[in-house]
Image (cartoon, rainbow, N blue to C red; front, side, top):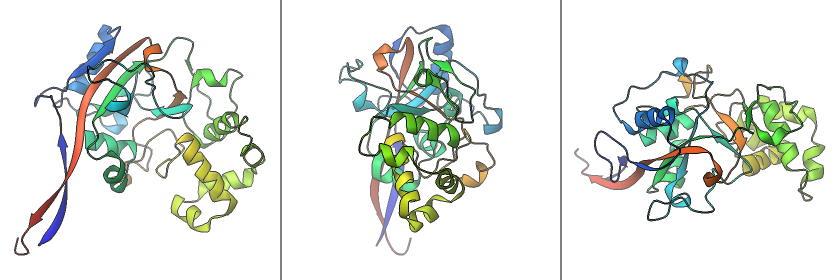
Length: 276
C-alpha cells in the first residue's frame, strides 16, 4: 500500500461560479468590480507582465477566524496582520486563481502550506487605506519623517530601515540591530537563505530577527515582487506578484473594504494498492 497526500481545495458555501462576499464597508463601484472579479472563479488570470503597480486598493489573505465572528461580523480587535507592518499585493494578482495558487504566488512553499495552512478557512480582504497613509516611491531606505504613515515597495534597503525604526524601543535587541554593519547587510542581501542559515553567526541571527519581527521569510527577494513557491523559474526574472509593505491597522478603521470567502485547503490521506 502506498500513502499519497492529496491537496484539494474545498470552497465552503461557495458555488462553482462565485465565492461569497462575506462583509463589506463603503462598497463603491470600483471596489464592487474588484471584489466581483475575485469572487468569479472563472475570471481570466492576469499574466505577471500585465499586472499594474499603481492603484488605491490592496489585497491580503488572512485566516477567517481572526477576522470574522460566527455571524460574519468583523471582530472588534481584528487587524490586517500580526506585525506592526504587513505585506499585501494588488487584487488583480488573485483574479481567476484558486486558494492554492494564491498561496504559491505569495511565496509559500509546499511544506509551509501543509504545516501551517491546511484545513484553515481563509478570506481575502480587499481594502483601501485612509487618506493620511500615502504611497512612497522611496527604494533606497531614506524614509521620510512620517515613515510609519506610508506604503513601501519592500526593497532590502527599505526593509532594513523600517526594521531599525521598529526596534528602537526593543531594549533587548536594540544595540545589536542598530549597530549591525553594512557589510553584514550586504551579506544577507547577496547570500541564498539556506547558505546563510548553514553559516550561522551574527548574520544569521540578524536574518532570523527580520523573519520573526517583520515576516521577511525565505522567499523574500527584496525587489518588490513575490517568488512563486513552486514555479520559481518563472518569477526570478522579476515577474511575480507585486508586493508592498504598509502599516498594520484595525480592519474596522479602514474606510473601505470587502471580505471574500476563499474556503480552505483540505489535506487527506489516500491509499492505493501497490499495483496501481
